[in-house]
Image 1 (cartoon, rainbow, N blue to C red):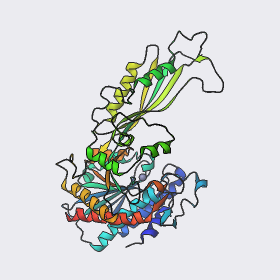
Image 2: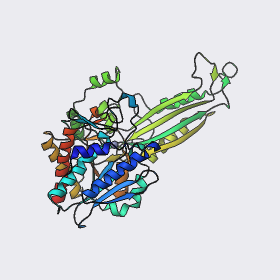
Image 3: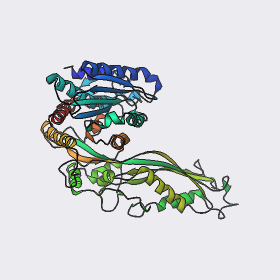
Image 4: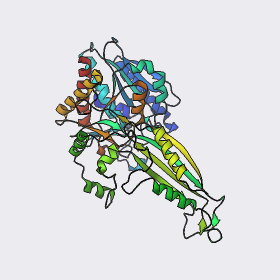
Amino acid sequence: MFDLIEKLKEHLRHASVSTDSSFKQGMAGSRTFLSDLFSEMGLSVEIVDTDLHPIVLAKRGGDPKWPHVIIYGHYDVQPADPVELWKTEPFSPIEKDGRIYARGAADNKGPQMAHIAAVAELLEENPELPLRITFLIEGEEEIGSPSLLPFLENRREELSEADLVLLSDTLSPSAEQLVVTVGLRGIVVMDVEFEGPNSDLHSGLHGGAVYNPVQALCEVCASLHDEGNRVTIPGFYDGVTEVEDWEREELERLGSSESEYKRFLGLDSLHSLDGYTPFEAIRYLPTLEFNGIGGGYQGEGSKTIVPAKAMTKISCRLVGSQDPEHVGELVKQAILDRTPEGIKVRVEMGHKGAPYLVVPPGKPNSPGDMPARLKQAFEATEKAISSEFDKPPLFLREGGSIPIIADIKNVLALDSVMIGLFLPEDNLHAPNESMNLEVLKKGIRVSKKVLEAIAGG
Ligand SMILES: [Zn+2]
């Protein structure tokens, strides 16, 4: 078995920043590191070309009757900027106080290494282990995974016969309390532009005669929610999954406090949909959010005009079976319908991603037809985390969006077991990123037990 810490450090030395082409060498170095490591473990490695950064695909084949697990990870990292805020060099990993500090330590090279090490140990202990494994490590996660969907579509036949996807690229609240993420919100974004007169007008000469685009936009925006913060667009909530009692209970066990949350945000009061706590609203409800608004004069002093234009940016987070395309259309149509005469409106759709939800076994609303190996994986995950972390995991949906998880579900018909191995204090995407080595080592044992259970089932 390889030295885990040394291997992780070696990987972290490759500055694999996907967004910046000057890091091409770091990206290539990271790929070579992975393919060498997988080859050493006896896996067959394929580097799959994409438009940007190739995918590392490593396979342990076997009897087609054996279970097949896809382990997902990404080898690219966020830029280290602002570098001056780092206490150590971002690409010179340092071990200190039970942590490894480096860009990518927690997102995603550390957590990904837990699964790699688990597989290496398992195969060493039992070369005959009846389990097929495919590592799918992409290099474009931090830039939105543009190549992953086409890759999945190209390889649908080969990958869809797997039983499930296992990954660690989600958050747990503390080193004592792990979370298994069972849902992610979807997303759809759009730009809205209101156009009135063909140029800004003198408000003394024309004010009172024309519809002010800023006023019109504000009226339309204000009409999209009622006082209870409910979106007023007919059909918007279609497909929203009701919050189950067990989900409320799991969330309560997290012990989040509204007063602390308010203090953290610097707010006197919160504004969630009637009937839901703010924490439930974040994870379990859709939103329609204004991300920005503008129009007219923004400079110093005053300028008495009727502006020619106004704009806003909107994003919706989606849950359950809400379809981003459809919800986007509903919002667009509502805006068009509510725009007053005298205003020309343009709504342009941006990126989108579907929500994801898997109900784990043993819950009142668990699907009766969950595939046996997936069920085994969830049960083994719960058991392994309970014994390694002395506390059962919480099965929670998350407010964020990882569209690739829904893509995997939609294209390959596979569910994902997402074991959160990074923590709030790990500084993901921020200076001084680090990985808790205790969590990493426990993560290896969890991954081993889960894979063993799937193989043994
Ligand atoms: Zn990540």
